[in-house]
Picture (cartoon, protein in one colour):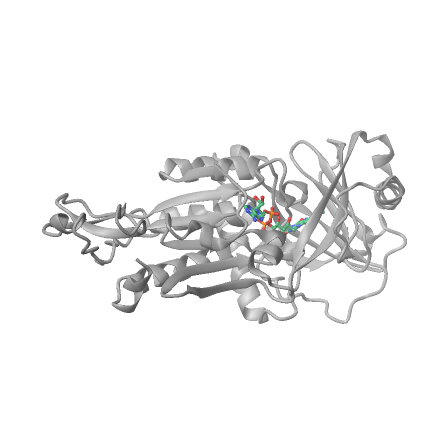
Length: 389
Ligand SMILES: Cc1cc2nc3c(=O)[nH]c(=O)nc-3n(C[C@H](O)[C@H](O)[C@H](O)COP(=O)(O)OP(=O)(O)OC[C@H]3O[C@@H](n4cnc5c(N)ncnc54)[C@H](O)[C@@H]3O)c2cc1C
């Protein structure tokens, strides 16, 4: 865990007569001024430092990992996760959760690679620990296969996963329709367990969780000092960002415990990702499609494609269909923004738009967002930052 930094609420006393008598001692506290009705900071006689209050919007993979990272790094702050939906009803619960990067065309590759490496190293630590089972993290080996040999045989992440190599002729015999393949070992995060484990860690750090839909970021202004927006596809409405759009994914979760390796078409739609309890069979990538209803024809086609790759799946049982909307964006948005309303300021850190690769980079983006939160808190201590309070 990273070290903490302390923060004391900037002093911006309310000099209304009702509050003025308090202005004499050592601690700034937030109260509602009975005269003006506004939330103000008054200086009280108590000696303890007041905590900075941080609200994280979103309880999917990105919101919870960001909240855990902030609460690990800033133990003097209070962190609350506020979300409309929780596990098992988030997009993150639909995903297979495998760590194989998706490429964000407008995020520089070195930044994507750093996020992936940080996430891989972090989850390796959990995967190698006694927490692995409870956290839903496990190692997974398998094959990425191609009908046509790709121009780029070494993806940018090849030296991050373990044992990346071209498949042998003998391995390829299993896939007669495919002429090239790559074998490697990576990690997989099973949800809900991973989300439940992160929520538990957050609470152990003193964090809180609240169910609430936010219509406008300013709703949180009077109660929180910094807002962290991890609302996934919800960011389109919440921030008005038209660069984010849904990429619909339909998958099947089946019982087939004998399947122990992943199989993924590098140049086709089919994938088979075994988890601890179910195997995820995919899938579709339908841009700008908001439909959360499942389509039986698509399910049939997914099942047929996956059985063509792994015929033993014809014996799979307990087939469940899930649909999720990937929060797609040309670049993941990990960015600070200050919103203004009259004389008031609202510091916001965005962390959304992870599309089809959130699991692969989430800890890297959570760490970067945490750094931005630290910068916001530091700015609140400057004279211009006091205007917010
Ligand atoms: C079928 C499928 C398979 C996938 N497989 C993989 C994979 O194998 N590997 C991989 O790396 N990635 C995969 N992904 C992508 C991954 O699931 C996403 O990148 C990730 O889940 C995004 O997480 P999130 O927290 O941003 O979004 P979400 O999980 O959607 O969470 C968003 C949160 O914000 C809340 N929220 C939104 N708006 C508001 C509001 N106005 N007020 C309050 N709360 C709000 C929601 O209620 C929710 O709690 C897959 C996705 C799909 C759909």
